[in-house]
Length: 517
Ligand SMILES: [Zn+2]
Image (spheres, rainbow, N blue to C red):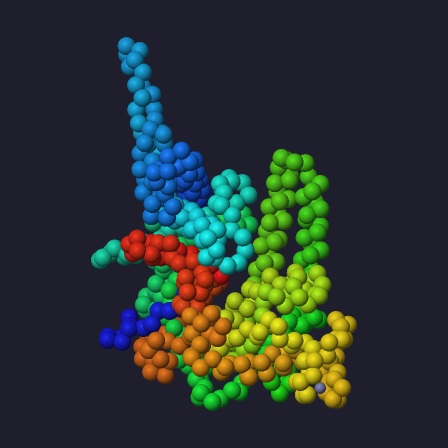
C-alpha cells in the first residue's frame, strides 16, 4: 500500500494483454458478448439514421448523438415492442401480442451495450468535428454498420469499484493465478504469467480501468488498460541545467539500415541494420499461404482453414516486428535523454523514397510513438526536427547544402573535405538541430505547446519523489503499451484533437474512452 500522506502519482497508462484460455462454454459466452456489442452498435446507428431521416420533415425530432444519449435511447428501445414480442393464442382463438423487449438482453452484461453506444458516440463526434473543420488528419466518414464477418469481434467492460467490495475486474482470484475475472463472465483462464500485474495491483501501484476482449488469429485475448504508478526516480534521466544544450542524439531512418543514431559530434551511437530476419523469411511463407488460399474453392472448409493459417501467420509477423521495435526503442530511451527524430509525415512524401521505404513507414510511425511515451516516462526529451530541415544534404562541418545528393550516394562528401556515412551524417545533423532549436521558445515546452518537446515531469517533481512503494519498475511496463502517458496523448481542443465525448456525463464513463495512438 502507499505510504500514509504521500500519495503516489498514477500517471502512466499502459496495457497488459493476455491470451485467454477459455473453456468451450466460455468461448460461447465471449462470442455472445462480442455479438451483443456489434448488435448494440448497429441498433444505435439505426436509431441515429432513422432520426436523421425523420428530421428532414420535422426539424424538432431529437437525434441521439453523444454516448450518453445513445445509451438512454438504446435502453428505452430494448424494452419496446420493436425489440421483441411474442404472440399468444388464447383458447377462444384470440391472438394477443405480448411485448417482451429484447429477449436475450439478460444473457450479456449490460456494460457491453453501453460501451458500444459510447463507441458510436465517439465515431459520430469525430465525423461532425471533421465536417466542421475541428479535426485534423485523415478524412473521417460517417459510422458504418458492423458486419458479422470481417470486422474483429470484440467488446469492452469497465472496472467498477463498489464502495466496500472488490473491483469488478480481478486478476488471480481464488488462488488461481492464471485467471482473470470479468463481470458477467466469471473467471477465465489465461495462458500467460500474470505475476507482474498482480504484484502491482496488490501493492496499489496499478489500477485496472477497463478490459477489452477480442478475437485475433483464432484466439481470444484480453487487454487490461491499466493506470500505473510512475517509474522509480532511479530510472529517470537526470534533469539538466537550463543552459545545458548537450546530449542530443539524432535518429535517422537509414536507407540500408532501419535506423542510425549519432551525436552532434558525428559519433555514431547506434545502428540497427535491419528488422529481424524472420520478417524477411515471413514474406515467402506469406506468399505461399496466400497462394494456397486463393486456390481453395470458395465457401469450402479447406478455404476456411487456409484463411485461418494465413491469419495466424500475419499475427506472428506482427508480433516479431512489435517486439523488435520495443527492444530498439527501449535501448535508446535508456541510454539517451535527448532525442531528435525527423518529421514523420512529410519527409516520406517529399523525398523520393522508394517502395521499401513506404512499407517501413508504418513501423517507423509506431517506433516514434514508442520513443515519445517511453521518453516521457523517464523525463527525457524527444523533438521532431523541422519538416524542411535538409538533414541528409547538409554538411555539419561547413553548413553547405549539397543539392545534388542522390539516393545512390552512400557516403556524404562535401567540398570542404568533410565526409561521412550518409545515414550517420543525417543523424548528426538531426542532433545538431536539437541542440540549436530546443531553447528557441522562452516558455517551457509543455504538451500544450503542440507536444513537440515531451519533457513531462511529475507534478510533484522527480527529485522530491517520495520513496514509497508506489513506483513501478521498468519491467512492469506492461505487455503491450498502447497509450501515451497523461497529458501527452490526451487530445484536447487546444491541440486540435477531440475532447472527451463523455465529459460531464458522470464518472462512470471516465474509464471507457479508449485512448488512441
Ligand atoms: Zn562542408
